[in-house]
Image (cartoon, rainbow, N blue to C red):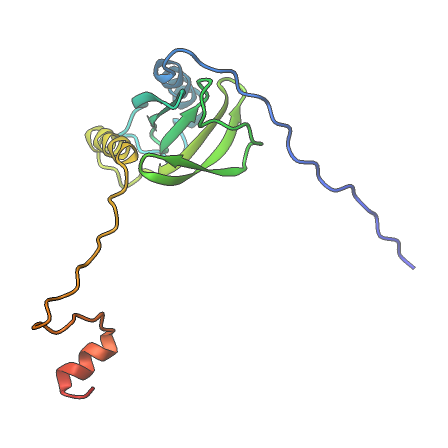
Length: 183
């Protein structure tokens, strides 16, 4: 009779608490990812050589830092702890949902030995279809603008005047039946 070897359940990864950054992290992040680009990523087949490393639009939102990092291998919206209300320490690889002005977005936690814990929302990866840095930069600016705009309130339709028939949502099948004269 064979015995099953029991392995202990895997413990969740440890959470390294983030240290608040008082200064805008854009230069720090740009220097870090520039170093990663030069030392580890430059020969990878999935990178886009038309792109470079740039941080775009970092602002403090509810006390934490939000901005976009562009690299030759991704364009991501970043959340960096600034001592504010948006941040929450969670293990690397875990996901959390943040209520931003635009609505709720999903962020993924990561913990880099050089820059510490951060969270990101992937915008574009891989970036092979981004033709140039100007397009990547505009994408980042558009993303930041979209994040900062609250969603439009729902449109409330008024009832049609009594002399007009009420508009109905029609399925494709219903539309084709009405077109053919069948109801």
